[in-house]
Image (cartoon, rainbow, N blue to C red):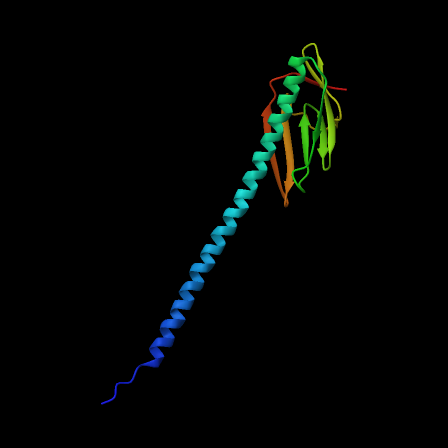
Length: 147
């Protein structure tokens, strides 16, 4: 008596294995790209906080050393942003220079234009990241005025 193999069973097992691998691949693909988007947003927000900290540090340094400091703001790669302080704003979509000039009780900053909103003694950075508006805010520890 000759035993015959069931060829149909092998092909059904193969089809189920391929479908399972496809399902696992889709789940991994979705998780990796979701993680990448979240990581990119986190890096952009971290960069915005870094800009706010650097801005404040230069203002404090100009005041404490009683020296005028010129600071060049650059966009975050291809992403531009707006910095708003009190009722003034500056748009950074290319290299933008500002100056911190010390005065008796704070610093004077040049390069800013009037803004329709007043954010008080905070620095607010706003960026449009792929259609999503991201705002960060930080309270300034130094008095700021503008020319």
